[in-house]
Image (cartoon, rainbow, N blue to C red; front, top):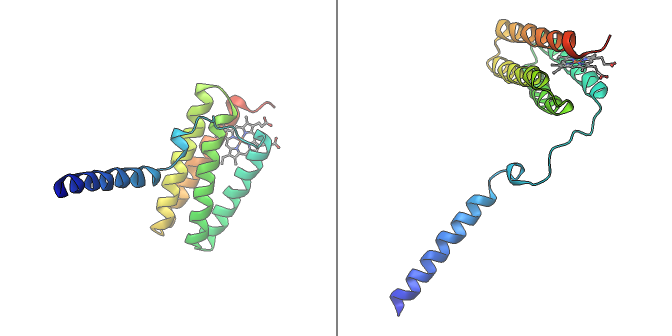
Length: 137
Ligand code: HEC
């Protein structure tokens, strides 16, 4: 009888452990609600431009912490930009830009000024490439 209770309480602990572990996972992937940006593309772009400016000033001032924060926000904004159009080429540019911003954040965390400047230039090229194709003149 005692052994039976030990098995029951043992399995209860396992179940509790699994559910605690599961609840620590991010919720977004399991959510049924599709992601929908609240911003219009125009407003998102003004945000991207502002962050690029903030990043360049932060590099100039060697404020690596501020630069990293702006780089991460820009990476996420590019990730949001993916959802502004239903077009595989557009998605490609937005995803590339997001990855380049993650690389930039890594350069800034290493206080690698040259690497950070190169990453900023690479991001700038992606801005331009997407505009050439998608920004109406
Ligand atoms: C994946 C495509 C894409 C990328 C990458 C991209 N843009 Fe844009 N951008 C657009 C589109 C599309 C427009 C036209 C906006 C509209 O529809 O109003 C635009 C417009 C703009 C505008 C003009 C906004 C206005 O209408 O007043 C600015 C400024 C801008 N982008 C900045 C940037 C900067 C800075 C970057 C890079 C850090 C960037 N964009 C990267 C697609 C992109």
